[in-house]
Amino acid sequence: MNESAEEKKDSIWYPPGGILIWMIVFVEVITFCMGIGSLVYDKTQNPEGFLSMQSHLNRGFAFWNTIFLLTSGFLLAMSVYAKENNKDSQFFFGMIGTILFGFGFLVLKFIEFYDKWMLGFNLESNTFFSYYWLLTGFHYLHVVVGIIILFIVFLNRKTISLVNLEAGGIFWHMCDLIWLILYPTLYLIQ
Image (cartoon, rainbow, N blue to C red; front, top):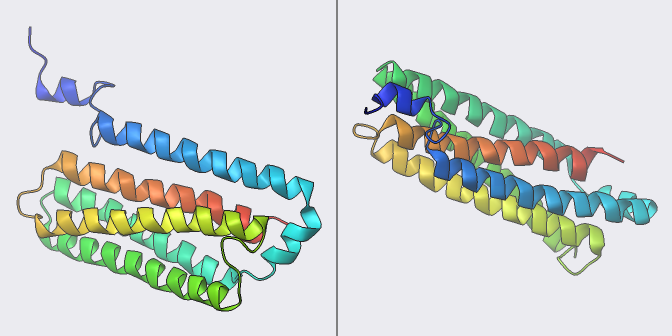
C-alpha cells in the first residue's frame, strides 16, 4: 500500500525541507558547539586574558547584527507562510527583506572585521582572537551561502517547491541559531 503524500510528509524521513538539510544542520551545529565549547574551556584557563581581549569587540555592532539576523529570520518565516497560502506579494517583499537584512549583517560584520584587522588583531594575535576569527569567519561564510540560497529561491519564486523553500529557510535559521550562541559567548559573557 502506497503512502499518501501527506502521510509521507509527516514521516520522520520527510521532515520540512527534507532529511538531508536536517543532517547538514546537525553536523554544522555540532561543529560550532565543539568550537564554542573549546573557547569556553580555554577562557576558564585564562579569564583575565580573554576578558582583556573581549573588551576590544564592538558590542553595539554585535547587538545590531543580532537584530538584523532575527528580523531576517522572522521575514523568512513570514515568506514561507505567504508561499504556503499563495500570497505572492507578501512572499516577494518578505524575501527581499530577508535578503536585505542578511546583507546588512554581512556589511556590519565586515566593518567589524576590518576594524579588528586594522587594530592588529588577526588570527595569530592570541588565543581569543584565533577563536574570534575562526568562529565568526566560519559563521560569516555560512551567512554568505545562506544569502546565495535565498537569492536562488527568490529568482525561482514562481516555480520553487515548498520543500526547497523550507530547506533554504532551515539553513538560514541555522545561521540564526549559531549566531545566538556565538553572540553571548564572544561578546557578553565575562
